[in-house]
Image 1 (cartoon, rainbow, N blue to C red):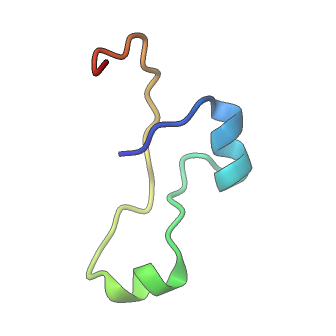
Image 2: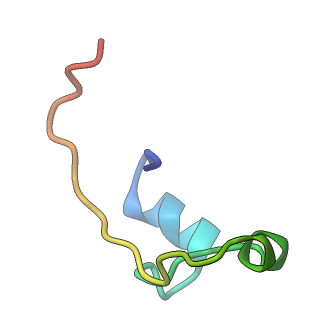
Length: 49
């Protein structure tokens, strides 16, 4: 789980396909499996302080 300031910030990192997971090739090679898609949720209130 990661937190981002905005969807624009996510687009700057991930590109236009914001539902496609960004996994570096080295990480993908080391993993047995990983999610290829992601989901985004808007946080309305941060109760963590």
